[in-house]
Length: 128
Image 1 (cartoon, one colour):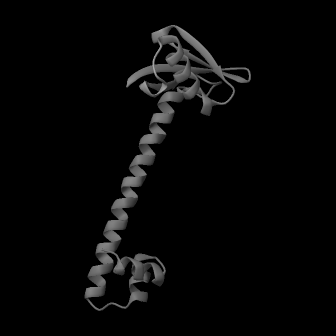
Image 2 (image 1 turned 180 degrees about the vertical axis):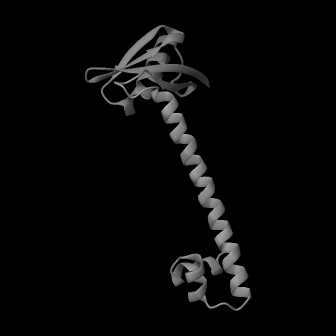
């Protein structure tokens, strides 16, 4: 699969999609359509099968928002970090719930310690 870079910019009610590697320009009404429009343009202009084309979008500035591509990358990284932190916290909660249950602490008290419902504490204890 060949990856192409494309840059989108807002032009009135349209997203203009520039594809420098093939000296191409296409447009999309919705940003959600931009990647597919770029893929179709590249496939048609380069005589490639559509499934052989991958497009990475970056953004030109929109209004006074600043570097949109960088801000989106930051948000994506923060979300990934949040998922990892949630996974870690859940694992720690399971381990603590198991340890407390092994020490004969009642399920309702385990829930109070972990600041979850007793039903959730029971789920944590029952999980492996």
